[in-house]
Length: 282
Image (cartoon, rainbow, N blue to C red):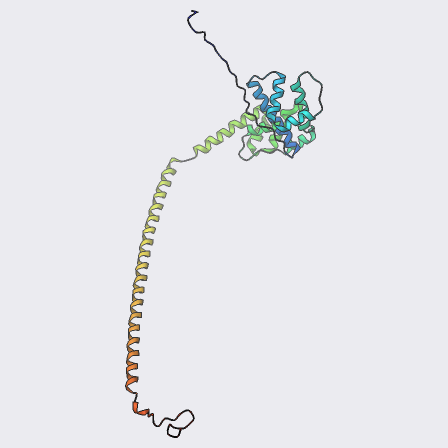
């Protein structure tokens, strides 16, 4: 390298920002234990991805990203012996969060499991296998899962073939997946392209009928409005004529009354006052 050229400096930066959220304990101890196992699997996966291998770093990350509850338990729980401080903390937290293992209760939950609606058999078997780990079936795990599948699924044809041919769990899952895929393909092939044309024609005819009905309805409304307007005008004209005749008759009656009145009927000299006398006697 020439002395006149500047020396190139390479700076390597490494960020290890984990995406784990703080662990939140629920009121149910059983669901809390399940949640804790899933949370630990997630954060340890991030440890491996970001190459966090030192026990002290893993312990600090567990406390930092675990939240206030983890930090509090790290100080309050009884210390255990061990050289790996991360494993010591993990064991203390496992004893606190995980419920005591009870294979009888786990098997009870296993036997209660049923497939969801429209759930694939392979997905159902995966759920059963996950629950079977807590049941301590040991070497008979696959047989127990297969027996439970036969008792709970609704595909009778698949059940008959599995029993008659003596399938194991792997063969059962393979055949079930192939049968389910075939059923979906057949269901997709049942659609007749001619149905599309027929439905389109029916839709056009329906639109035409609706359009005609709308036109007729508009015509009827226009006629109704015109009839109402005509009746209203007739009503106003009739009122005007009746009012004119009434005014004319009232005027004529008044004139006739005035003409029939005779002034001579009233003689002031002969009128008596209120006490029965006349003005001359006073």
